[in-house]
Image 1: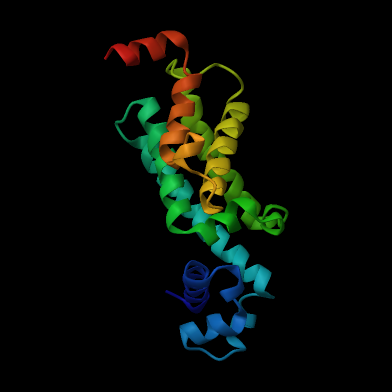
Image 2: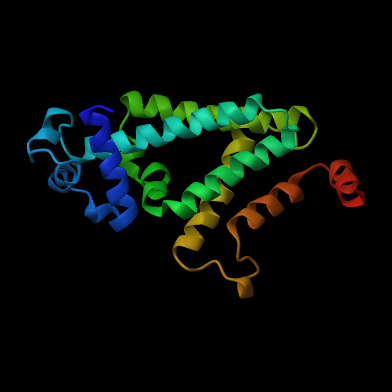
Length: 197
């Protein structure tokens, strides 16, 4: 692993341990064991370093979605596996999750980061389209369906992160909530057949 990759890895670990405020170029340099000037040889500023973290994690999502797509699972189970991946990541790495899916600076950054973010979305959209082609989801434009599922998923994760996802409000588990939403939007004949199994 080269110095750049080590700096990105250290920044991700600092995000996990202390949130956004814990990531400084000096702290990352210290964590890697290099001089405080070394990060500037690889990143113009802190924002570029955080973009490096986001790019790495988006790429990992894309690779995982490719693996899911190539698996022998049914189309709907592929989609559920991808949703579980999002939830597991969001619950294990809340600060990184906010970086990828809730940071407006990251969303507007462009360049290679935008390429990998769009690739991630496209990989997930392909799983949604696969479920639609199998008759498991309504046949509306795949990008619209994907965005709807994204919105519910990210909304539930945000509620959980803010301590507002509670059983007395009807939902206490992110994955259960998003899977319930998937079940509710499935075509009636598919939903009926699932209930009869």
